[in-house]
Amino acid sequence: MLIKLIHNNKIGAYAVMLLLILLFWIKPVLLGHAIDTSSFENPMPLWALFAFITDLPWLAYVFSALSAIFVSLSINRLNSKYALISKQSALPGVVFVLLIGGMPLALHFNPIWIATLFFILGLEYLFAAHEYRKVMKECFLTAFWISVASLFSYNLVLLYPLFILLMMPLRLLNFKSFLATIIGFLLPWLFLLGSELIWGSIPDYFHYLSFSWDKVVHGFQHNSFSWAYLVSISFIFFIGALSVVRAYGTKKIFTRKQYLVFIYTALYIAVLMLVTGLNINMITMLAVPFSIVIAHLIDHIRSVLWKNIALACLVLLSLAGHILL
Image (cartoon, helix red, strand yellow):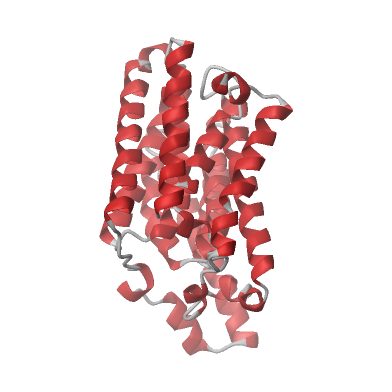
């Protein structure tokens, strides 16, 4: 049965996840969408380092697929480390692949893929801070890696307030941790200033530093199918959030806080997408908290039959989106 194949920590489940990634990535390559070439028109400094791939589409395909593998494995690692669902399982990673697979244009290599890796790393440092009495170091590292991510995509600057807000449900926010977080946000930009003073130019630095709606607004002309897909996965996430609320009293206190982090993060990124033109590339980052919450929903269905039906419906939705979009 489908759920039995995926909802475990055996090599077969990870093989299915890898196979799905390879199958989903065929369409963008065949259609010539392996690279988001527009992202190099006015790139952030770290993303400009990847400009060489515009002449090597096959390498962009490899980078994009590898990024998807690392992200899905990182999601599964979070589940294994913190027991977010009932057992160690590849299910969250598979759900992530299905969610992004339904949007083929989100699969091309773009700065959000690299930023998502740093985004998950930031979440891991936030969760690790729970184990320490003094949390300044972990809060600093969280902010530092999110700031590094913003040097790939300026959209990540808009996530700075999110990570300060996430410190509240985790009870990490105090004057020292707040100060450490601010320093973490500033340090990569200070490194960039130093590099521009030596090898670049100050006008370029202020261009990177200055806020502009042109940097964060990326309008995408959605058709009825893409709207239907976005509404569908949002509805599934909403049902998943209700399943978290329903099971709230049965979870450990720290696990409750972690699920609050995932739900708040999903809502924040969803609002950010709405404000900035529903940038299709942001689906990659939005799918991270979505995958955890939706995996929780499937995991907490008591009937094995209905678990298989729910997972099969998600697979069919992903395939429909992949074919029609």
